[in-house]
Length: 169
Image (cartoon, rainbow, N blue to C red; front, side, top):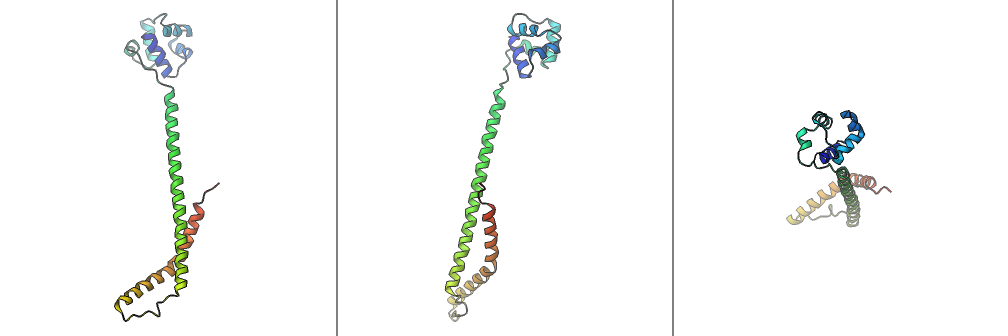
Protein backbone atom coordinates (compact mmCIF):
# COMPACT_ATOMS: atom_id res chain seq x y z
CA UNK A 1 0.00 0.00 0.00
CA UNK A 2 2.78 2.45 0.91
CA UNK A 3 4.66 1.64 -2.28
CA UNK A 4 1.58 2.26 -4.46
CA UNK A 5 0.81 5.52 -2.65
CA UNK A 6 4.36 6.83 -3.06
CA UNK A 7 4.30 6.09 -6.78
CA UNK A 8 0.79 7.49 -7.35
CA UNK A 9 1.44 10.72 -5.44
CA UNK A 10 4.85 11.20 -7.08
CA UNK A 11 3.30 10.86 -10.54
CA UNK A 12 0.38 13.13 -9.66
CA UNK A 13 2.88 15.81 -8.61
CA UNK A 14 4.71 15.35 -11.91
CA UNK A 15 7.98 14.29 -10.28
CA UNK A 16 10.43 11.74 -11.61
CA UNK A 17 12.07 9.27 -9.25
CA UNK A 18 15.32 11.24 -9.56
CA UNK A 19 13.63 14.56 -8.68
CA UNK A 20 11.96 13.00 -5.65
CA UNK A 21 15.24 11.39 -4.58
CA UNK A 22 16.95 14.80 -4.65
CA UNK A 23 14.19 16.31 -2.50
CA UNK A 24 14.43 13.48 0.07
CA UNK A 25 18.25 13.29 -0.06
CA UNK A 26 18.46 9.66 -1.16
CA UNK A 27 19.54 7.96 -4.40
CA UNK A 28 17.05 7.21 -7.17
CA UNK A 29 17.35 3.46 -6.57
CA UNK A 30 16.00 3.94 -3.04
CA UNK A 31 12.84 5.56 -4.43
CA UNK A 32 12.56 2.72 -6.94
CA UNK A 33 12.84 0.11 -4.16
CA UNK A 34 10.16 1.91 -2.11
CA UNK A 35 7.82 2.01 -5.09
CA UNK A 36 8.42 -1.67 -5.88
CA UNK A 37 7.80 -2.62 -2.27
CA UNK A 38 11.29 -4.08 -1.85
CA UNK A 39 12.01 -1.80 1.11
CA UNK A 40 10.29 0.84 3.24
CA UNK A 41 11.52 4.22 4.42
CA UNK A 42 12.37 4.63 8.12
CA UNK A 43 10.44 7.19 10.18
CA UNK A 44 12.78 10.12 9.39
CA UNK A 45 12.71 9.40 5.66
CA UNK A 46 8.92 8.91 5.76
CA UNK A 47 8.55 12.43 7.21
CA UNK A 48 10.96 13.81 4.62
CA UNK A 49 9.01 11.99 1.89
CA UNK A 50 5.68 13.41 3.09
CA UNK A 51 7.18 16.93 3.08
CA UNK A 52 8.68 16.46 -0.39
CA UNK A 53 5.34 15.19 -1.75
CA UNK A 54 3.38 17.78 0.28
CA UNK A 55 1.21 14.96 1.56
CA UNK A 56 0.45 13.90 5.16
CA UNK A 57 2.19 10.76 6.44
CA UNK A 58 -1.24 9.28 7.19
CA UNK A 59 -2.10 9.52 3.49
CA UNK A 60 1.15 7.80 2.55
CA UNK A 61 0.44 5.00 5.01
CA UNK A 62 -3.31 4.95 4.44
CA UNK A 63 -5.42 3.45 1.71
CA UNK A 64 -4.54 3.46 -1.95
CA UNK A 65 -4.29 6.85 -3.55
CA UNK A 66 -5.94 7.13 -6.93
CA UNK A 67 -3.34 8.09 -9.48
CA UNK A 68 -4.30 11.27 -11.26
CA UNK A 69 -5.22 10.48 -14.79
CA UNK A 70 -2.95 12.13 -17.33
CA UNK A 71 -5.77 11.79 -19.83
CA UNK A 72 -7.91 14.21 -17.82
CA UNK A 73 -6.29 17.22 -19.47
CA UNK A 74 -6.65 15.62 -22.87
CA UNK A 75 -10.32 14.84 -22.21
CA UNK A 76 -10.94 18.42 -21.09
CA UNK A 77 -9.21 19.84 -24.14
CA UNK A 78 -11.29 17.59 -26.39
CA UNK A 79 -14.49 18.77 -24.68
CA UNK A 80 -13.42 22.39 -25.07
CA UNK A 81 -12.67 21.79 -28.73
CA UNK A 82 -16.14 20.33 -29.24
CA UNK A 83 -17.72 23.32 -27.49
CA UNK A 84 -15.68 25.73 -29.64
CA UNK A 85 -16.80 23.91 -32.78
CA UNK A 86 -20.43 24.14 -31.65
CA UNK A 87 -20.05 27.88 -31.04
CA UNK A 88 -18.42 28.34 -34.45
CA UNK A 89 -21.21 26.37 -36.13
CA UNK A 90 -23.85 28.45 -34.32
CA UNK A 91 -22.13 31.66 -35.36
CA UNK A 92 -22.02 30.50 -38.98
CA UNK A 93 -25.72 29.61 -38.91
CA UNK A 94 -26.65 32.98 -37.41
CA UNK A 95 -24.53 34.80 -39.97
CA UNK A 96 -26.13 32.82 -42.80
CA UNK A 97 -29.64 33.50 -41.46
CA UNK A 98 -28.88 37.22 -41.21
CA UNK A 99 -27.40 37.21 -44.72
CA UNK A 100 -30.46 35.63 -46.28
CA UNK A 101 -32.82 37.84 -44.24
CA UNK A 102 -31.08 40.93 -45.58
CA UNK A 103 -31.32 39.58 -49.13
CA UNK A 104 -35.06 39.04 -48.54
CA UNK A 105 -35.43 42.65 -47.29
CA UNK A 106 -33.69 43.92 -50.44
CA UNK A 107 -35.98 41.78 -52.61
CA UNK A 108 -39.13 42.96 -50.83
CA UNK A 109 -38.14 46.61 -51.20
CA UNK A 110 -37.46 46.18 -54.92
CA UNK A 111 -40.77 44.34 -55.46
CA UNK A 112 -42.74 46.98 -53.51
CA UNK A 113 -41.05 49.78 -55.44
CA UNK A 114 -41.85 48.06 -58.74
CA UNK A 115 -45.48 47.55 -57.65
CA UNK A 116 -45.82 51.21 -56.70
CA UNK A 117 -44.39 52.27 -60.05
CA UNK A 118 -46.83 49.97 -61.85
CA UNK A 119 -49.83 51.34 -59.94
CA UNK A 120 -48.78 54.95 -60.59
CA UNK A 121 -49.97 56.19 -57.20
CA UNK A 122 -53.76 56.58 -57.35
CA UNK A 123 -53.60 58.99 -54.39
CA UNK A 124 -54.48 62.12 -56.32
CA UNK A 125 -57.33 60.43 -58.21
CA UNK A 126 -58.76 58.77 -55.13
CA UNK A 127 -62.48 59.27 -54.34
CA UNK A 128 -62.54 60.68 -50.81
CA UNK A 129 -66.36 61.08 -50.71
CA UNK A 130 -66.83 57.48 -49.57
CA UNK A 131 -65.56 57.27 -45.91
CA UNK A 132 -64.21 53.73 -46.29
CA UNK A 133 -62.24 54.64 -49.40
CA UNK A 134 -61.06 57.88 -47.78
CA UNK A 135 -59.47 55.94 -44.89
CA UNK A 136 -57.93 53.42 -47.31
CA UNK A 137 -56.58 56.25 -49.48
CA UNK A 138 -55.06 58.02 -46.48
CA UNK A 139 -53.43 54.80 -45.21
CA UNK A 140 -52.08 54.06 -48.70
CA UNK A 141 -50.74 57.59 -49.04
CA UNK A 142 -49.05 57.39 -45.60
CA UNK A 143 -47.45 54.08 -46.55
CA UNK A 144 -46.31 55.49 -49.88
CA UNK A 145 -44.93 58.63 -48.25
CA UNK A 146 -42.94 56.63 -45.63
CA UNK A 147 -41.80 54.04 -48.14
CA UNK A 148 -40.42 56.58 -50.61
CA UNK A 149 -38.46 58.33 -47.86
CA UNK A 150 -37.19 55.30 -45.89
CA UNK A 151 -36.81 52.57 -48.52
CA UNK A 152 -33.59 53.92 -50.06
CA UNK A 153 -31.85 54.00 -46.67
CA UNK A 154 -33.11 50.55 -45.73
CA UNK A 155 -32.11 49.20 -49.15
CA UNK A 156 -28.60 50.62 -48.86
CA UNK A 157 -28.21 49.34 -45.28
CA UNK A 158 -29.47 45.88 -46.28
CA UNK A 159 -27.16 45.79 -49.31
CA UNK A 160 -24.19 46.71 -47.10
CA UNK A 161 -25.29 44.03 -44.61
CA UNK A 162 -25.47 41.44 -47.40
CA UNK A 163 -21.93 42.39 -48.44
CA UNK A 164 -20.60 42.21 -44.88
CA UNK A 165 -22.26 38.87 -44.06
CA UNK A 166 -21.24 37.06 -47.24
CA UNK A 167 -19.20 33.86 -46.96
CA UNK A 168 -15.51 34.56 -47.04
CA UNK A 169 -13.70 31.84 -48.89
